Length: 277
Image 1: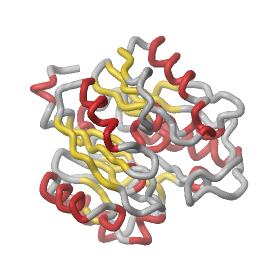
Image 2 (image 1 turned 90 degrees about the vertical axis):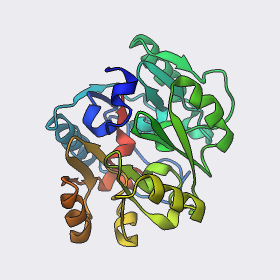
Image 3 (image 1 turned 180 degrees about the horizontal axis):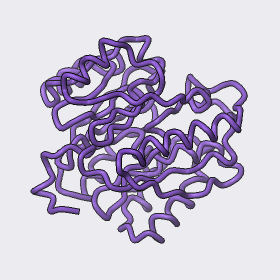
Image 4 (image 1 turned 120 degrees about the vertical axis):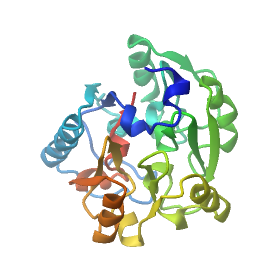
């Protein structure tokens, strides 16, 4: 990767070269640890949706690496929650719910095998990785906290690199992770759902990302903010309304919609299925 000083004010979406995904060989909904979970997964449809997302990312010039899902760990497909990456370093997740803790050792093994420097493996505070933390550019980390991630964990996370951290308080139980209500689009803009955040956090998002686009409740519950921006494409679940498309177009971005209905039965969509490396 380029020198951090050179890339700090360039959006992650411009710099992204590789991502990690976990194909849904064993994806089901077996328990309920967030307000969205329920229903029977059509496994054939889920695999098609996953492949369509993978292809949409590859079509933007990003390489997709894969890690096989382990049977008995149905939420392992949501690899975004495995940690947060900064250059060749990873700060590992520590899941809030016991149903997901079995995933941690498999992620750790993959990160070690692929040469990442490991942080957080001996820290006990709950942290759910890219589900609650993301970079808009590599000088600015958006640090969600609430029902899943503890606020003070970011004192440790900050040790993986030279960047500023903005703590974001999540106040709506439906939007239990930052990536359900906030998607960086550029170094100046995000897609976001304001009612998911405290007033102080809303003010900070608008101050630092002045071109941000607020989605409405219908879009938010369609998981539109659980999108991933790659180059000039915002890859989103189905449900982006015309006003949001027009606002993104004015910023130079186009929308690529991918059906995520099977994964939404477990409370996840596009970004949940992808870890930015």
